[in-house]
Picture 1 (spheres, rainbow, N blue to C red):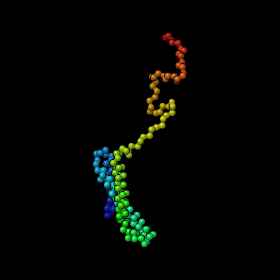
Picture 2: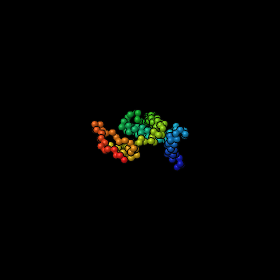
Picture 3: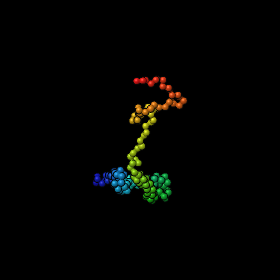
Picture 4: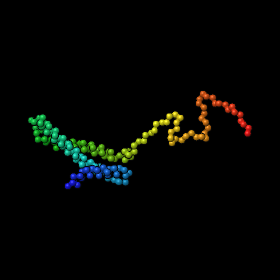
Length: 156
């Protein structure tokens, strides 16, 4: 009996684990619709029970507020209203879950890498190539005259 009571939790957890494995298998494992159905079955049944309880409670409150109203007298609307609510909300949840489960796993697992801020002028960031020691010196800034070589060549 105790094993039977844990089956809704086990079915949901195993369905979620299967969804994870299928999405990260890059197409080698199939069965996404069945895994999604396993993951959603008991939560959607619980949602239906919650909607029935809400409709029943609403009917009791309305019957207390308006005791002469025949609409709330026997509560015939409770069951159909709960079914309609469950179908509408459940269909929307299944559609959203299918859209999320059908996306590639890379869309969720690889967060964007932050780019480091730019280094201040004149500072070489770590890992960046430094100035080439064999290159010629940079040209003078515009408007500046190049200095003349005042040294005489040495005869050696």
